[in-house]
Length: 194
Ligand code: AP5
Ligand code: MG
Image 1 (cartoon, rainbow, N blue to C red):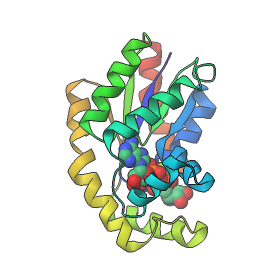
Image 2 (cartoon, rainbow, N blue to C red):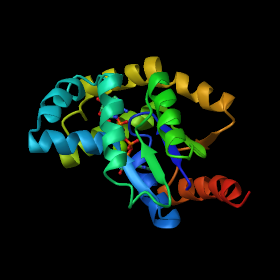
Image 3 (cartoon, rainbow, N blue to C red):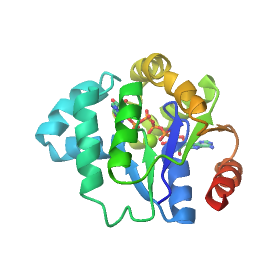
Image 4 (cartoon, rainbow, N blue to C red):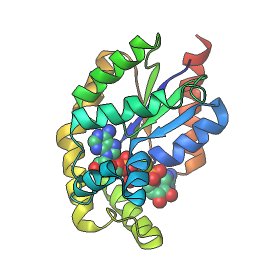
């Protein structure tokens, strides 16, 4: 298996680059944001809880999020045979430790963390543009500011966590989608062939 975490601030291009990575490496995509938005759209019990946090730009509590992730993994073992791209998970040190354990139990590990590093002005521009185009409910200026603050306080420490594990690949996430994917591919190809 080849398991990749795609890491970065809101609007850094995690979903966009995940699509490219999936096409190229045949990985299974798990976006925790998409999983939660699907529950919100279906008005499930989890969706009602998730909506309260997402609309405030806050993280879903670790214990709940980890259970949701584990359940999703277990429901997609066949699709995950070649490996998984984790998009938006982990977002806290507790989630990162849980992911290591979850994968260890399944005889596998995180092989690489792709860190998309993008200027803050560009992040806000991208998110507000998408908000206008798609109406995604947390893509407004007030919530974006909260999402960025949460990213800096709770998620950024993971960068050092994965640097220490020698898994972090910093990618300049400014520029065109194609040029960014080329840089990701250069990094991942080296690990895949080692
Ligand atoms: P989530 O859905 O993960 O949102 P996010 O991290 O805020 O990131 P986005 O999806 O907004 O951005 P992205 O990095 O995927 O960029 P994209 O490719 O879309 O999480 C939403 C919420 O769910 C969280 O706030 C939290 O409440 C909850 N949640 C999720 N996971 C959780 C967890 N693990 N624990 C707790 N809570 C959790 O690109 C953005 C835009 O820019 C798009 O319009 C795209 O077309 C455009 N774009 C992309 N690349 C480029 C480029 N190179 N040039 C120009 N435009 C570009
Ligand atoms: Mg996304």
